[in-house]
Length: 215
Image 1 (cartoon, one colour):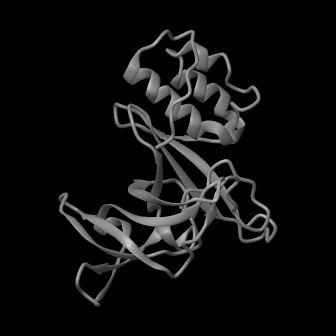
Image 2 (tube, one colour; image 1 turned 45 degrees about the vertical axis):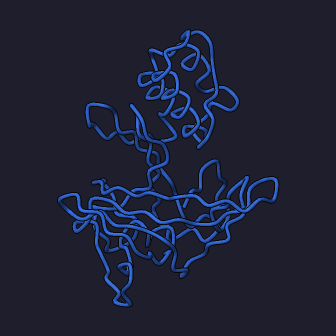
């Protein structure tokens, strides 16, 4: 699920949306098998870290449950309902891709995981959650990962994100000079990636900052 621009106080909350979909709901979804074949059906929504470690899937027209692990799929996704900031019900697709990480999302889990894809373009942004078992007030910690055009996946931690972001966004001077300022902090990295991808696609004046519309 989309859980950006958040604070973690016992649970991860959206700032602008209220979720209608919840854990255990069976919603429209798909899986992409190793080799690229796409299968449509229903996905059972799991917890934040369950979504990273497995997919409970029902093929379209079947009541047979299949549980896939990350090594069995290239990616998967599901559709959820949300209430936006003006009270309107919207549908939004959540996509996950298989990636390799340095630390599992939960105890005894694999380091090959499904990672939520937040933004896609010349730079693709992922969010990855890890359980914090000894801190009930903040049960999850999250990290951003950037996938560049050359296929390199880079972990971006809060402590060093400024240097990383300035390196990644160096060609877009209007963005680079704002990094670290208000509204251009670690938690805003999703919007920065979206705006950078918009700039690379449109090639407007690099000294002029333009905000991309969120799809």
